[in-house]
Length: 161
Image (cartoon, rainbow, N blue to C red):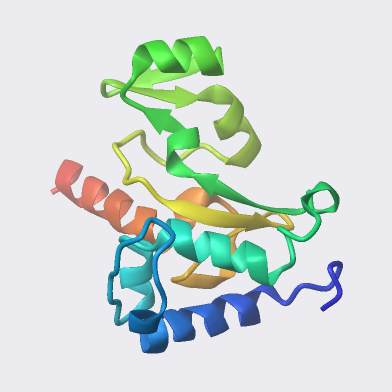
């Protein structure tokens, strides 16, 4: 596989298929076992394992110093309820709804439509797009990933009856 010509959509779709159909034969990196029947299930409990497998498939772990164009991101890099940590480690923050948001990460990857509590999630960033098991085609902004969009839709519906 050429590192400069990664077909990320095919990799993600292939791995998602493997997780769904063969996962009971695959141990989790944390030592547990979790069965899944859809990309939604992968994103809700197996996202970190899935992101690692995507990176492995793209040869990221073979020579990570040459692979700066593909990497994982995590929601805990953007937001935390640990205000002291955020101030000490992130510097400038936005404080909304008792949560601290990293201004640096928001400026790099996009500001969400509203500042709500979001689940812990790990995904792939590649060529200015965000990818996960439910979104093999990628989206421009992290908050457009389905796992977050469902929450933003609920938030909009709840606040605008």
